[in-house]
Length: 121
Image (cartoon, one colour):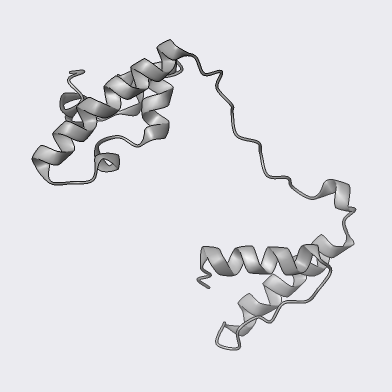
């Protein structure tokens, strides 16, 4: 059974509002049954037991952090332009921020070719 992210979000919103979802008829009967059983069991749980979306980590921004991020992004974007690719393929901003903040070492979150592109190898 394959469900798109959009479908999962739509279903979760409907279920959280106490409504029923329409399971597509082309799903295999045993999978439809298992999904229905799981949803019924979830409905019986107290709402306090429902999972919650974890809050993202907020970094304290300062001028030094912003300067480090900007410098890394400049190097990344220059290399990406030379390679004619999107910069996020080399390193997404979230990873650059982790490195700039000292939360992660480049060798722990980047492959060798990515570090080379960012002049970190």
